[in-house]
Image (cartoon, rainbow, N blue to C red; front, side, top):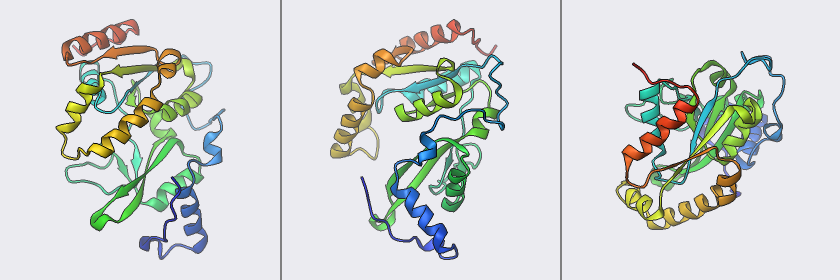
Length: 248
């Protein structure tokens, strides 16, 4: 949705040109150069002649259990998540460099302009006194190239950009399936549950994770309908198929 945003107060010291660039990027869905496939990146340890590790990607509708599965696989198989960059304010108990790399918006914009991200997204957030702001989240190439034994949670557009960067055959997509009734019951237990917002979220998920996407793009489907042990068993079989051994 296109929104006309005012000049933010914390950019007063920036030049007019810099402010205009920031506003332009905020209004755009993505930069044109971010839509291009990235080839021959000299900054990465990855060489086309080398055999690449598999990058495991979890995806699925809201409240399907992605985070639970992610934590299970990380703990049991010593897999590592990528730390994203974000411009949103750091919350209590969050650690810079562990939960996120917290940066100022002008720094994030500079990273976009320097083509340092594989993918990035923006969200409209409502803050104090119902004032709206735009928060950016992004996965940097440097982070991706440095971290080994990678696993993460991505949406469809993020998956496609990672595939362009890393190679489609090197990305293992695991779709977590859960029925709508159970997902809604989980959502209602969250403090921020809102009926209208949940309905919109479900409508978006239905479009995002269509039957066509699951059939044509997903490598594995894990069922998580209130049986965590069964979910873990399915995940274990996938890890075994790729010779990923658990921590002893």
